Image (cartoon, rainbow, N blue to C red):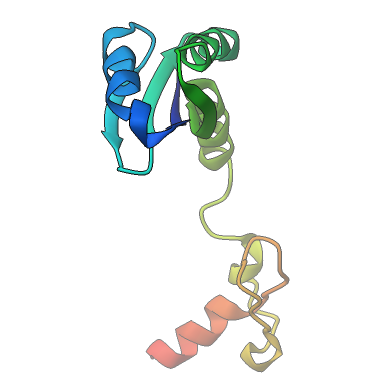
Length: 128
């Protein structure tokens, strides 16, 4: 299942009509709009092709200037990321290497991609 948010743009003079048509169509769920003619809806589809079909329906509503996909969620993509996380080490192996001095450790914001040996040894000493 895919879910995407869509920003629909219309002229303010057509706002009420476009909002009504969006609420009445069966391809999206209306959420909110502003006085400038921006409308937020979400669409769902079993795949990207179905989502694009729904987007085309919205684009063809009278007085819609544009309908742009802003955020997308894909269960398949989430499942792939979860699999990577589940198969990765919780603690990078270099953190358990007791042969490196703590002062030699340089942290650059990502422990999985950096050589941060001796980190665990340092904390063992501090904790005792």
